[in-house]
Length: 121
Image 1 (cartoon, rainbow, N blue to C red):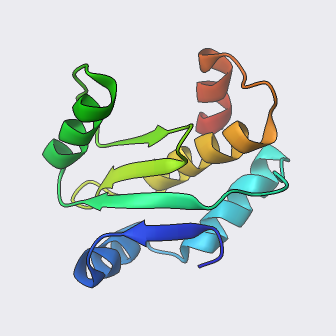
Image 2 (tube, rainbow, N blue to C red):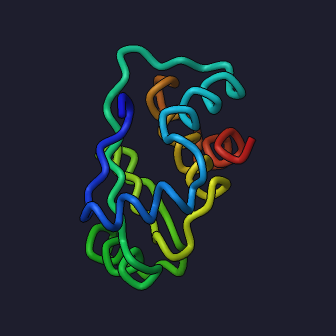
């Protein structure tokens, strides 16, 4: 994979790719096209695979010292997408990839609301 480094077991990686339903690099390229943004130079995106949402929430709380009830998030400074395999889908992963593209394309970083709107788009 050109854009991503998966962090998890081979079983987790296989399960995640199956849940997402298409090659991860294709998702990145489609998101770049839709957003009309091609960040250069591109930083690799780490995808930290968690078995379920509880593991995602534990990582979030460790990093940010506050509660979180989601199934995925991105640490923008680290370029880490943390995602629950159990809840993974193309829509959820593509949204986080959108955040990664916006983060790397825009300097300075857009306001949170703009960041979220672009990632949703």
